[in-house]
Image 1 (spheres, rainbow, N blue to C red):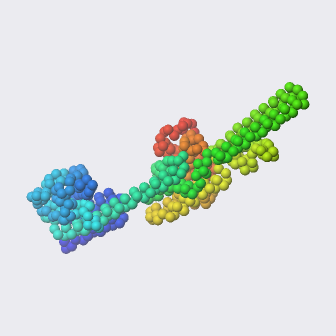
Image 2: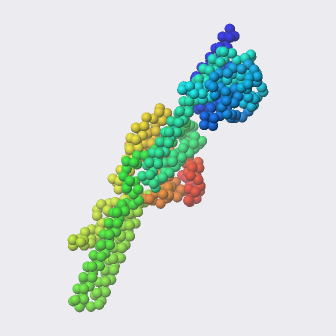
Image 3: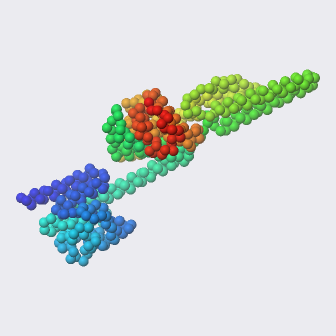
Length: 502
């Protein structure tokens, strides 16, 4: 009866290990469980799990019970080293008398062992990747049943370890692909280099702040490891769709393209030369008709006034060409310039500004025309189409949806879908705050100067006040000093304390 109960207990321990193998994704935690159960299964005082380091030609203690720190020895040294080298089980009832026994290795920091069972861990390919060592059977010596059970356990652990390593390699490979994708998009627009990584870091830091001190609807919110990884990938890839946007639009610094502004400047210069030529003709006529010096001087003075007026007009046009961060006006004078004409090479009068130029120079916010803005906004749809081509695992299946929501706004004014607050998850809400903050404060954008930290927070506050961004998440972003924690105190181009949070 006792033997049956003992057998059932060992099989129960094996079942616990099997359950852990399917449920536990943290390899270190899994191996700790395995070693604890291994000691119970074979009724040993302690167990140690060694892994083989082929590159170094060593065996090292990954998980160890009992005294002593990490042990590293060359393959072949000690009983464990021998088993790792030849791939065969060794069961010793008097280990110290065996020639393969090595006191420094096989004692494991404890007293001289009375018995020792050493089993190789073999991968599905038959390669020894580690060794499990059980020391000191509590009663008697390790028997055939112990050998059988520990071999079964070692096989399960070997598969789990191999899978974990393979999973890690796949994860590193995919992570490398993600980083390569970020480099690809940022190479098209070097001015935004680092933006995706900063957005990811800011968003993950805000995620930490939510867990540590959120109130209201986000109180008690805890994120899983899968949610963290999903958010990181979504943040890193949120702008990948810009590969589908024309580079000249991506890098557009002013409302008119450089070549358009050059044409406009030449037009004003030609208008000035045309005006001077017409004035010169009038002065010649005055001389021929004997109008007198005063009339000629009045004509010269009138010409200079007109030239200065053209210069002032062009200076105003040039100022209108520069983009604004916030919506603004002051473009009424462009209509006056539009009503001014000059005589072209064909002798016909032509306007100094076309209707299309007036329209684009009157853009109240940013540098993009409505069509160009729609083209830029289309990057989100391109991103989603790209991300939907990736066969995401079940744990990462939400990455495309999270990335798609970083330009949505709670009042429905965002894009591409115009979602309302109930349809926008917390991850997209956090990323929206991080994305706008970094876009405002980045010092390397060709179309704007960097906005100081405090001013960026003021702009974000207007978004919150307008019901477009999450008030609680923004409170945490400010009070937890997320930008400072991620980017350093150099972001405080103006004193943070000078800006009161509402």
